Picture (cartoon, rainbow, N blue to C red):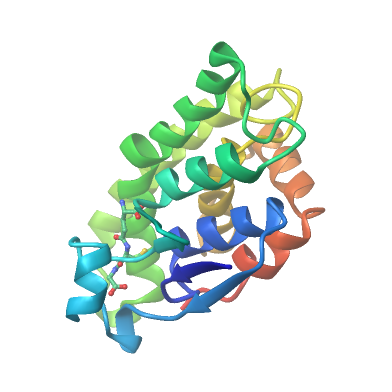
Length: 206
Ligand SMILES: N[C@@H](CCC(=O)N[C@@H](CS)C(=O)NCC(=O)O)C(=O)O
């Protein structure tokens, strides 16, 4: 059985939990990190020297970096095109996974920390506005892409939808004065049909 190490309120752990469910794999969820601690213990450091979550164990195989875990599970276990086998099709999914890390991650992390983990009186309003501007610019790019694509990699749901799907829940749930992005909203609402998305991602942010 898979072991997924990491607290379930971590967006990067949620990617792994949702993907395991998409792939129909049973798993043990071992909550470490944050208030749970454990990421600096020798047994954890031996698996993941970065002191962060998630880490996946699949028998003798250990994987860290959440998007690498998504890729690993998808390529090893997925059916029905979730892991596109054809290189050009796969690149259409992978670019949005890399885009999540390179473009969307930092402003969304700043918004999450500002609104969820910082008391109102301690918030840096200017920094939050800057993060909102950057996240909004990124979401406009995704919205334009989704105007002619049902899912991020084209006409079918793939692993590429997982990382951006996790962040899009936060985009639509944080108290932001969001611009109207109808294609993004249509795609986001289509994810609500996925039981694993509702179970692991659409949860109270803490
Ligand atoms: N790029 C890494 C980032 C991992 C990361 O920063 N994880 C955060 C939680 S989202 C973490 O471990 N924070 C410290 C902790 O929870 O103890 C990944 O995607 O796996």
